[in-house]
Amino acid sequence: MNRRDFLGASTTAVLGVGTLPHGLVAPWPFLDSEFLPSYQRRALRILILGGTGFIGPHQVRYALSRGHVVTLFNRGRTNTHLFPEVEKLVGDRNGDLEALKGRQWDVVLDNSGFEPHIVRDSARLLSGAVGQYLFVSTQSV
Image (cartoon, rainbow, N blue to C red; front, side, top):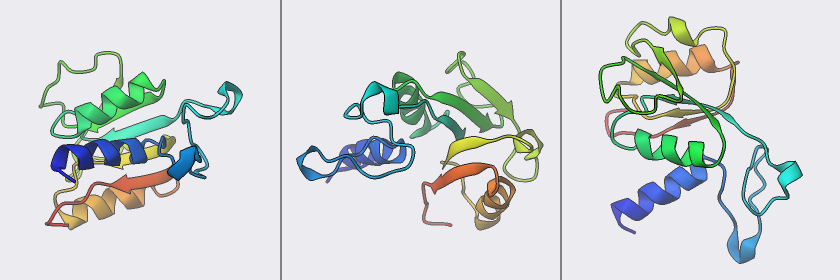
């Protein structure tokens, strides 16, 4: 599997549209696969930590194409022109998480955890506010 195939597969799995062999739908609680009847699909509220660099834009585009509601949390410095249609929360993973407090999401995609304490602090803050927290790991965490 090359890098492009891996990224495509991970984005698909993370956003809850994976299927098992022979067309069986994976038993995830908030699956929105095209194989489900329309009355069983629902839009997810997805928080993407980062979202404007490397893998984030691909995840945002895919989630939006599936009808999900996306919120981005980042410092507001990189590719600020991207995704004018989504909610953007400005803060810093290294100490300024205030914008995340008191909110609820179905899924968090953590793409920007570059130090262990950054991931730990975000995960603790969001532990009661999300259904599923998915971390895209790096070598340093």
